[in-house]
Amino acid sequence: MNNIGVRDVAVVVIGAGQAGLSAAYHLRRSGLVPDRDFVVLDHAPEAGGAWQFRWPSLTYGKVHGMHSLPGMELTDADPRRPSSEVIQEYFAQYEEKFALHVHRPVDVHAVREGEDGRLRVETSEGVWAARALISATGTWGRPFWPRYPGQDTFRGRQLHTSNYPGPEEFAGQRVVVVGGGASGTQHLMELAPLAAETTWVTRRPPVFREGEFTEEWGRAAVARVEERVRRGLPPESVVSVTALPVNEAIRTARDSGVLERLPMFDRITEDGVAWDDGRSVAADVILWATGFRAAVDHLAPLRLRETGGGIRMDGTRVARDERIHLVGYGPSASTIGANRAGRQAVREVLRVVGGEVGPSAGPVAVAAG
Image 1: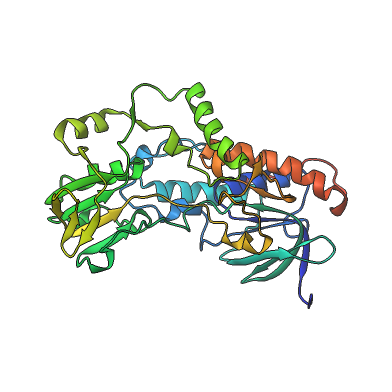
Image 2: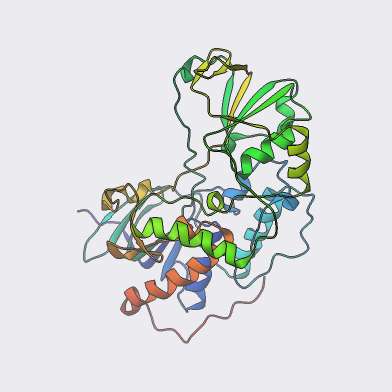
């Protein structure tokens, strides 16, 4: 193996969204020095993680449960501003304040076994050799597109939530929204006043939940997802198991019929969707609000997947390899879960690389910038 140009660090962090920045913060607080002891690599062109790609009509006031990063609160945000702008600015300020030195844009192609027990991280910026890896790549890079008979014959437009531009483009059009999560309901409520007609289709009947999101409710949802990843099954998102919280906008949409749901269609036709019982709906657009899958393809050379299709986890640690931690995966996919996972991953990673970093005088004090 040719190691010319390979750079050695104790820890590589992949991703600079909520989970990656949380991990980087705790690495910095432990006394590790960016670019000498650890490096943060991010695919996105700017700070902001996946938030920078959200549609403009998703204002900060519509965001469910954005949790501040450790060490710096997000305060006084204007709820009328696009969440992409608010959180992009916040993340950029956070990186500057704690001098995290994120490398971007950097594509991570693969992580392989390297020499001397190190992991070889192959990227568009070159190769890094690391004693441990914290992968915080989230899900935004892997939108899930279901396949249905006739899909390729549809003469209208098909797009995914990840490419949703906002409601104005669909004025006067007939739109079928597929998906029972928060994105699907938000799209429907935005589109209904402008579209000629909207139709909501889901695989399972949507579950709405009245009342406040309690700590007990949240813990139960996280425990369910955690049990799946502990068994090596593909994770469900935390959001998918918490049900849809009912607010005034949801009540209004339900009363007006906007959130009247149909079961999943059986096929797609040239001009819409159809069911085997003879029903059909004409459509100009099919909007797939069908969620995302964990973006972990870069880990494929390490053969970490179990027969159940997922990666078996013990907390944030991959059960097969103590050097590798996944944050923002499974139970830590929520913003508050990502913060906790970042702290936990760093605590365990430091045990793995303890003898591989320079001496430290303790937590690093970083002046606010």
